[in-house]
Length: 379
Image (tube, rainbow, N blue to C red; front, top):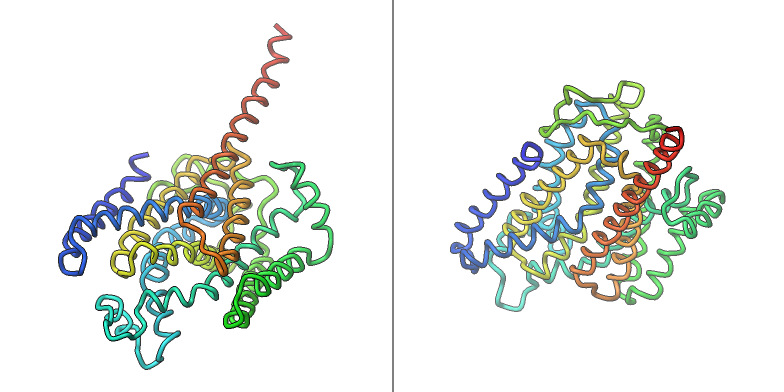
């Protein structure tokens, strides 16, 4: 545990120290800056636990080299790309293009007082298209899972009818388009309806493109996933475990999985980035909290689940993660017309994952008891 989470704890301590010294240089005090970074870190972890489960389910299929790439290069993209650069680019793109990302950063650090739009107001105004893109991407991921044919179901009374519906050709696309049209018609106002539709279509196209390329390179999940993982705490091959080449992918196939994970991680981070602006508009504080603390601990959770074979031991966790994704997608789409508190978004995913974990524990105990009964009878 210490080897897996030690680096994240060290980086988190460094982020809090950085916030302590940064606070007095901004409009925040040292104590307030530290508190905000800590709150944002906890927010990101609670929002992204389902992300870690999905990351683990995909990462264990990649070769050790690409696992290390995701846990090193991927973390840089997650921390600096989505939590710092993305909001700046969004402000730049939605205002005067001549503003430039550097000027956008100055706008964030020194809010105008002459009536011009602030960094926070620009990000808030862009929420409908961000939520539409991320919501539709995640909804497609959820639908593809619940509509597919599986040997094991978690919520059987609900999942079995969905699997029957999934026999319809392109069922996930049909349901997603219906959801997008309903969202644009009843949740988006007249001013945003067009951009919501465009952003939603782009979210679907992005998912279909990445998923289609994954299928093209033949990287479907193996029928029998490995019981042990091939990562150690630093993303290096474990010495005592690891699936063989029959269940791991490399080369172009692994690269496509890497891209898929990055797009997926970006979609998961949308709600965290937007939710952070309800707490603070300071981009440095957001990067320290969401990026250095939140994203690092999500990576550690991913390594922990891959290294310990958690998804093989607790078979409903992947189901729960996908249902949490579905709930997050729905809440993102609803947030286009109605504000949803961040605590609701975070706790919903945690509750679903916890329910899936408890169901997995109950199933294991029941199977162990059933396996032990014949032995007792034989004695």
